[in-house]
Length: 50
Image 1 (cartoon, rainbow, N blue to C red):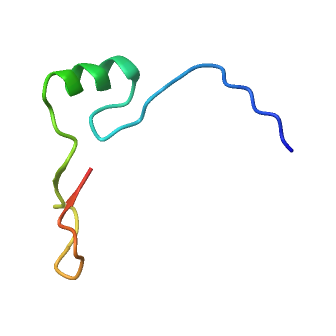
Image 2 (cartoon, helix red, strand yellow):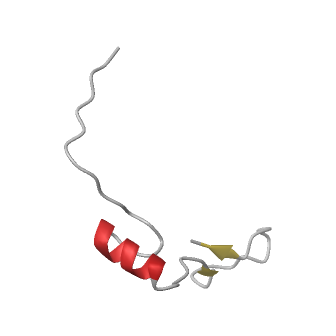
Image 3 (tube, rainbow, N blue to C red):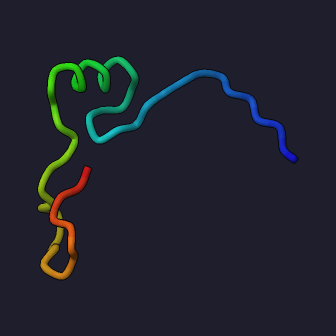
């Protein structure tokens, strides 16, 4: 069994990188979901990502 040390917290979300910015956008009603536009999604069931 390996030992693990947690030294802090952090967030990487579709809203932002970082706890404060992610929280601010979340309570501000922002969505991390959006239409996929970087590549062709015609053969993919999902057309949104976050």
